[in-house]
Length: 247
Length: 242
Image (cartoon, rainbow over all chains, first blue to last red):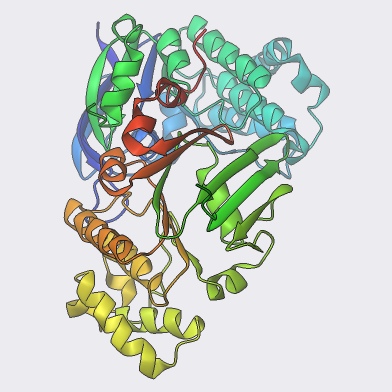
């Protein structure tokens, strides 16, 4: 199947002599969840930042929808239908929930002629149907919401943009198990709406369960990949290999 | 046989909002031990080091060093007591030379400049940075800066050195320099708590390892036994098996 996103032989890092990613190649299919797992420090978030244009690779190429986006400026990603939900909050804490939600839409309305005011209102109405709590809290300052509610705003903001590709970095970290379950539910909602998702989460079992295809990143290199079903059952062995435990 | 705990942590609890980063942690380290501290992301390793080095006050429980309560003391007091640490994110004084960075560390810990300099030069030789002694620290590579910060920890003889991911994102050659240094100091009787995701190094360096998960100790013992423990492997999967 053709990939919506193809990262090919990408080497990237933050300082001159340290490559965080070393010749990394991954593909994300349209309309499917692709999982990316690995230990802390493996480079998972760095891949996402590189795809979004926050970090320019030293070598390699990134193709999105058949176009070279290797030198993409981060602020242009939204126009291409690429959305990034980072691990940390990307909300403006002193703006209301509603204003936070409208920001990307206002941008899209200015940049693309296709998004009419009426459609914008329809998307918001549809959103409040799917996330009813946000209708109640729409006038609250984003910074006054709980961690789980802020994560909901992040997902809602992404959903409003109707991205073709959504990069989701550690969505459940720091959340209670109950809220984490809700978060996984939103990811499944995105997948049902045929968004391509690159999912990073420390909950390896969950990533394997939700994904169609899985990559394992270790110290900046892809060390294993395959259909998610190939990883089920033998996860302990995989973890030992990722940890370089040979006994 | 009863051994006196050099470092003793009892029921240590730290909560951030509703999340308990440390949830009643108990552990003990004997004098001269080199103990690995491992666990998945978010398991509480750095939080524990932050409490032991005075950067966080625990919500409950206590930590003692040679019988003296150390939880709640500020970082400067703890440094003077010989509790020294490194950070995951390296911080050096970029406009001071490599040598001056170490002199600052030594003088801040009570050495005179005259006493600090030979010690600093000796350390720079040990970590292979002597030829860069007059270079501004801001011009070092990431790995070299990490080595420099690491060396600053050894400007005074410490009672316990807490190393937080010292091997992360450094060149293998520098990693070997650092590992050799730790091995030598350990052989000389120095006490370490070493956080690392680099399991081969932990296995090679640390006779004993403690594994944290979700703010609690899930394994504590001989390093190879800890890494053979299915609960430890399970912790790295992030969710209990159904």
